[in-house]
Length: 217
Image (cartoon, rainbow, N blue to C red; front, side):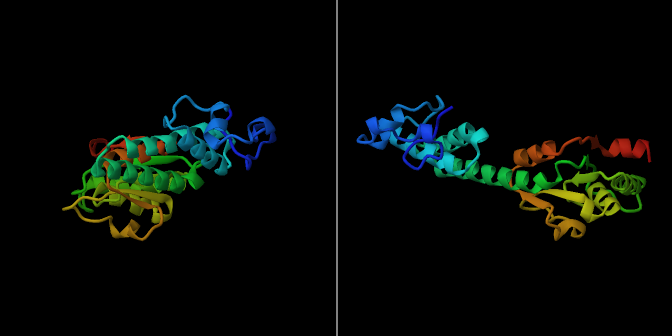
């Protein structure tokens, strides 16, 4: 699919031919094949196509084009400041989380959830601790919400080096527990849906809720 335009195009057969070199960029753009999803402004679409080419990701060029086109369209279609802020924060959180998980794609992961109010002397706490340790011993990593209780127990069992903290920032809740607070694998999310997406992005995960921990503790 052709979405490269202009004289700086890296593919010779898509460079502006002599027959159209006297035309402006928009006229040249109209002669190229691009995704059907566009901004509606040929000049802007041509600039986006050039930008997509600079990412040097031929296999993803169409997706990059459409993502940038979406951002532009939201900017000109009357979305208010709050809506734009939501989309902006969402995209930044997803980009950061995906980049953080990328080096660990080949490692299996398990997510551990449970009550944040479970105390260390509770059988469920000890069970979560032992589960984290057992999974780490088998070269798995664990993912928790980075909170206290069952989540902290899982991190303590596996060790911070084998754990991800997928924290949510809330006005009246405590911050991530100290065992993971300074680890680079802690992510602080503002939105629950981007946080949940990050859990799902972990390959080979399952949930171990508190009730099951109690039944098998």
